[in-house]
Length: 169
Picture (cartoon, rainbow, N blue to C red):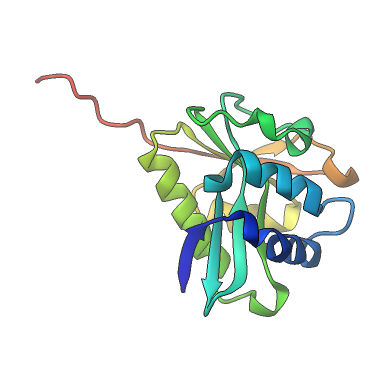
């Protein structure tokens, strides 16, 4: 198993997994993924098994504390020094689900956000996944204002501990 960041050559595989994981109204198309890859490839975490993409997480970093629908369509929302790592999708090819792969990738995203000094991570999910994300420390903030794909979403937030101060004792 290997976790790495995305390359432009990963676009077709990302789009294929995305299409398998989300209904058309919710899935990011190849053009949207291409735009994201051009702006923040290091905020795509890919889990590969023997070179095959089985799971991935992606999303920009921003100063905005809440995930809003317009962010899905504007890769320029990304601010590399932003406080919040947004998660647009946690996608695992259906034939590889229930093996802990998404969790592996998600733990890496959380560890990287902490190492980068982020305030935390924000995602939205459907009712059925609230408990799953709570298991990683995300708190349910209730129904989001997001109407992405015409669906009701819960906003989930994982606030990271503040980095230790370098002040003298």
